[in-house]
Image (cartoon, rainbow, N blue to C red; front, side, top):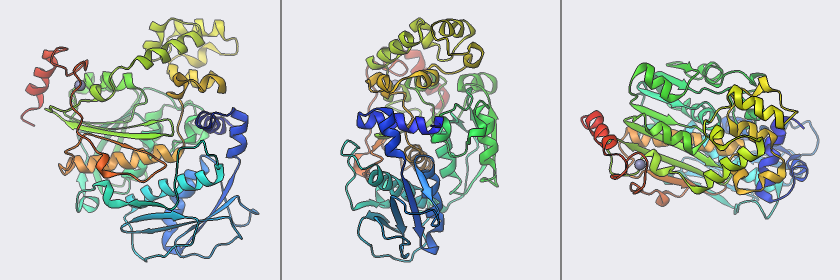
Length: 452
Ligand SMILES: [Zn+2]
């Protein structure tokens, strides 16, 4: 099995509570996408997402496990079939043929529809009652997204923002951002390299990119999609960038750990637009602009006891101290100790890697069935892509001052529900903004950004 296949099998093994070999067998499925001519773009997006998780077939390749029929097209096989209908109001997916309206749909909405169509197709072919529930017909109403009127077609300058993190959600963000009229300059910061498992969900990365630095690799691959936007990579952390270039107006946050998010808040960006995934079960979107009485990034991702459990199990698993794990990246010292207790690990190859990444690589399916393991699991491509689309929508909402809420959680297997958007308050024990924690920090925020 390829590393990408293994990454997907681990995810599914954890979701279904089965072992990795069973999971790999369940992912050995082929979906044929047949689309009406007007839906070629949607078909392309769906195939891209399916291809990173299972197999997307060409018509000549024999009988698929499922034929997905998009729009008013004639099925090419006797089935089983899944049908999707897409128009300006939304997308419907069902096992029965559907009625269709011939309408142009905005490409960002098409990208969102592709995530939901992919979820439904995967759900059909994996076919397990242990998967998160997905009821058919699946009906997604675009009005639930809360996209400000006219914002999809209004050109805007994104200069002043920094994309923090070039991993799965960072890839998803740029894949979605290419569908709106954006110009200016966008720095991308990420200190890490592309891991072997990353291409399972990072659509701008291929297996040839493994071990190359994420930020320049992403910038180079995505640049062709942005004729008026210059992507500028920085191989460093957000804190290091701020130390070099000064305060940042807007942080678009796609990093992969709670700890990294809390430390990012300490750099006091005026505005934060953030999205994260919890394995394949949830996408969380957060935004705020300073000064705010609502939750900050450190409130939303405050320290939870589970993190200790995860750090402890990583430390125990690797045979090192928990303090080393808290450094985030593997130092030469730590690498020497890890190599001692894991003879298969080559010391030089792991220096500078994130602990989460190495842990994932070494984990057996057994270890991943624990709650500690689940937090480091990589989601399927459609989940990261959905997080990216929702992040672009949150940016538009913030740009148009429509973001009166600051928190939204979306189940990637179901339709998004607008009324679940919430305004979360500050948490009393937030390490960044709580009254008791750090008066200086709050005063600083006000002096920096209250006139903004
Ligand atoms: Zn806070």
